[in-house]
Image (cartoon, rainbow, N blue to C red; front, top):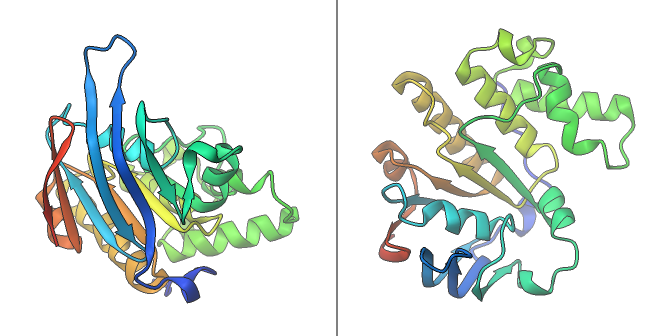
Length: 237
């Protein structure tokens, strides 16, 4: 498998802070569910963090707030030094600086692997040939170059997850957020995906935040946050 090309941001991927939350809380509209309660934490550039917790603990809510997919009820998220509450274009921030990997892949069924990876590039300035070249290189990087012309239903679940990871990387994000990325995979395929995350972290100096129930993820990460009842109870480094 090819060595992953370094991210354009790698030169600045020092141990300084990429994400910070201050007294971050989220209460859903009915007021009965406090999904997060005054969470304060910091994540450095290039850090590999696992967020662990039972269903309903608040870990997915935390990931959504870190990725600007949702807004907190109170408190603040700072991304690369900027408060998200003051950002006028969160969609642009997500598109340009954050990659997302979900348990259910979210691949468009009528597009090939190569076309799915290109989706985040359609709003940019690259030509069609440049988009295809970049997507093709990323598919090769994640071991899927030989499956570029296949539709999602022609791929195994592990292959679909690799395509989803390539798509998440195509805009050279500063941060990769993954929500239960091995949840639908068998143990062998799950280990292969975690091996790929290890390579992304090492070779691209990418900041990784991964939600999982799996202790395998916790063993790979540099740091583990344990969330319970909306609070970070244990921060293992």
